[in-house]
Image 1: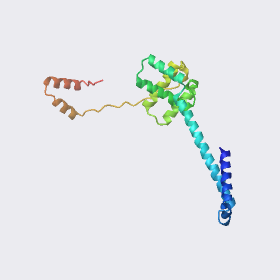
Image 2: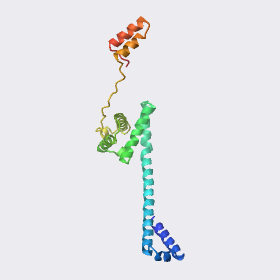
Image 3: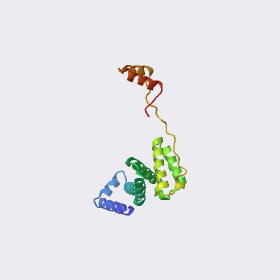
Length: 203
């Protein structure tokens, strides 16, 4: 990368010298040495940017391969899930969890250690992932190591986190009175009154 850039720079300077541009630049700032120094710096800067882009593209390709994971391992996990008749939504969640893990550890999950999985869960918490996201991810990883890889000890340090349960909207006494009062049938009005008074809820 540096060789072609310096070679191109040399040709550019030679062309400008043949055209008399360098001699003109001696008469006014910047001087010839300053001009050449600026050209060298710009060439090096261009080369550095090009190298950075190449490394970024190469890293993205590696990350894409890790996200897809090893085809045999992925297929084994799919077979295990199909054998247990897991729903398509659950399978997508578990496969996504495996992809997250591979992206984090930058190699196949088959070779991960118990401590590395623990660090992965710590990273999920640090990223601000919700309790439901963490628990679903942990469930997918535990399935991978318990069922697919038959390595239960590897995921033994993972743990679920408490998820807050949201209460439904509770009617006020006045709203309950209006609700029961709108029922015209005495039989149904009595049934609603008994259900509310007994604290019955739809589960």
